[in-house]
Image (cartoon, rainbow, N blue to C red):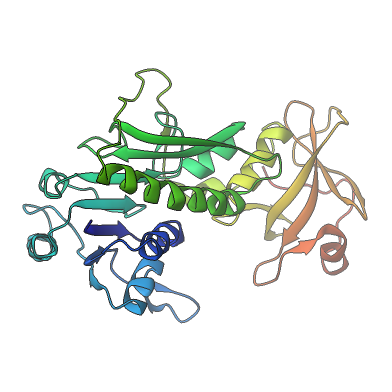
Length: 319
């Protein structure tokens, strides 16, 4: 089976590596153009491109696939490369470009997407972040037959996993990437013998996982402590959750919801000890901050952080 792979970040690379190890023929890879990254902001290839080059696989990096769009020359070049590759199927994982109908129709078996949620819940760009932020007890991976809609295609395979109480987007990402990699190999093996069964998505339970914006990083202390704690984990490692105190913006990475309650203004530091920094939140709840980071510094346990940045009860984080 000839498989064109379209993906960009680490989540996609895990699936690409698994497909390659399983012996599928991958004549072409589509991935996003190189982006500036790191301290020097030098152009860096995507994780998927890096692996493709290591394996000597051809790579195309169109800025668009729309023949009548902003970059028609990119789309035309990509179309020629796809037609030359003669794919039986295209596997898509966190690619980052919308596939127009001509792409969906080109492979004999269409395009299969690895989506990190239990569809139809959390369609869209940030399903892992939003599942943690919402306090979902479980999530999973859906292998989907792509259509023209936004994650609306029929479901081919679905597997569930529990979301641990201390899960971050980073840790859950890795678990789902490994799960998706295994599932897409299974899906292609089933497809090869006609064993895949498409099931339409339910009309009920549709939610959208909107893209994470940097502006969401600011902590609103007026929210309940449990809500803030989930957001800390949802935004770890990106964009991180931040708050201002003593004229400085600090990132807060890890915290614990405290049982104590009281009528203190949200954002007020109510206690400081070797365990952490207790802060009043909305709904008369409290959050004990256990890991923080100053600009340019490292993540530190609260006790270590306080040695270089002392805080005391009565101080206020800005809301």
